[in-house]
Image (cartoon, rainbow, N blue to C red):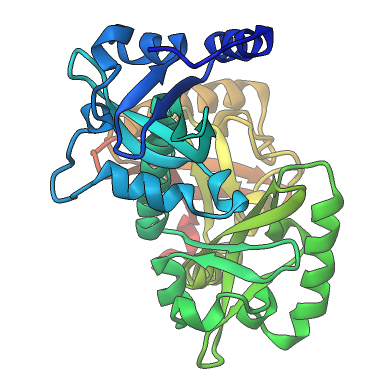
Length: 389
């Protein structure tokens, strides 16, 4: 069956409809198809003769748990205003081979030769639906990853209003998401830092770099719901969406690490206080005998206390040494260091010639092992024999 045409104008419009890339169906008020164009034949794989006179439900399979009556839908949808009719309704269509596909359908009521007809356009939405499904899956995966991330993650819009925070951020700051969404980011930091931080984020929004380590501009401090403060390490990234920047901050509580670092600094301070003020000459060597550390008493046994670090123990400028004694002492020290590096402690006396006379030094080399038993350091200690009880 074809459209009624009785002049060249009718033929002209029929040619246009046949040439359209969009699939077209003309149906009676009872839902019988009276015309399909070539695009619909290509889309669904039916021949024209297989569809003409058939109910439109032939192309719309019943969905599990959903009762669809095409004619009721056509009647209702065709009666909507122009704004509604311009929208495509997403349905599932069925091709001749039984394959189901996502289609977008739009309908308008009109007449041909005084007979009421429904004019239906059909668009293949398979690719669009697949893209949408993939986008939703990606979004779901991303949200799940963000939700369980070890770092607290907070996103803010161009006005620096909080738009997202993950579970870690909720636990870290003590807020539920509905307490902070839409609120200024500054609520998560102490008052004294808010103005500066707001200006820095604004400047970052206008900068060319895509991310920034926030701590490079100074200490960053967070503030919990209960008012308590804590040091944080933060990185901020920006993404342009809709022409406006969105900022995402990855935040890590470094309270424990800061405490450990302070404790380590204090420990090192105490160690050096003891090390440098010990009466005995003490040093630290690597397994090859190179000096890593040497205390004040050890430096006093050399002619020049400078430039000792990085030198082999046997090459240090010991006070009063002669060429002959130097060569003999050198060989003896090299052998002792090699034995200590192999794990064997060494102890022997050496003579140090000073302007006031010869001083006999009780020298020990103690190997220091790591967890695996490997010697990683050697500690040389020298004591004046005359002062040892």
